[in-house]
Amino acid sequence: MSIAAASISAEALGDMMQLFDSQSWIKPFHEELAELWSLCTLREQQILIKDLLMHFCMFDAELEAKACKQFNEQIHQWELIPRSTWIVAVADANEVDGSSAGLQKLKNKVLPYEDWHARFISNIPESIKKIKNGDSIVLFDDFIGSGKKIVRKDAWLKRLLAGQGVDKTNIFCSCFSGMELGIQHIKDELKIPVFASILLRRGISDRYKEKELETAIRIMKDIEGKLSQTYKKKNIDEFSLGFNQSEALYCATNDNCPNNVFPIFWWPRKKDGTLFRTLLQRAG
Image (cartoon, rainbow, N blue to C red):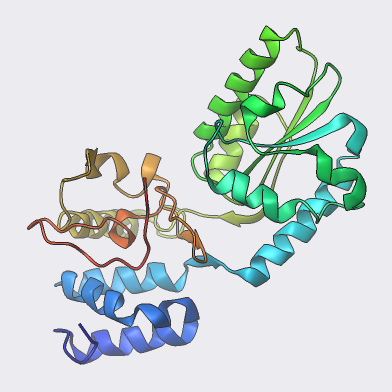
């Protein structure tokens, strides 16, 4: 389906052209954008979607390079040294996820990398074989949404270490990008230092106020109502406004979309059962 063939108004077409100018990552997905606009049958729905996309953060190569540089700077600000520090992706064993992929990008960015590269561990179970009492641990994830995953992983790591007689460690946390609410949740629950190169606000709740907030939430839920209730044993109610209502407007280029993002951008089936070509894709 092309833009010309889509059933959209002149106003909607103007919206799309503005988005192409402001968010260059959307340009290859003009057909998907047209389908999204066609799904939003009310003008107020299109206006909300446009506003959210204008504030969307696409983590591209430039932002990635900046985040890697800042990670290196933060490691040194924390005064961590390679002989007693482990940088651990929060992945499970044999799991391919954003934390292990992000760690690979960082491996030669912490200086001097000849000393640091052997201190990176791709998953939590593997780290148990190496961490000793007195060591420092930097838990790493590429993106932090609600923060609850890091809290769970921290508890799991400590249980595994305790089983090996290790109970005296210094724990830090870092990510490329994170939701402000998730970062704060980790700080409140774990009382540990947390660093994120990019801090993200909720797309609606942190940007709209009072009546406008209520209206925007209603409009988004009306749009979500046009999507299938279930898909591959998942229920959309669990992901309404993003997992844990994170309202995230974030994805990394050519990466798996976080489930914290509004499902209208990645939920792949419409209410009538037909497939929905989405701007972003999520596997799993």
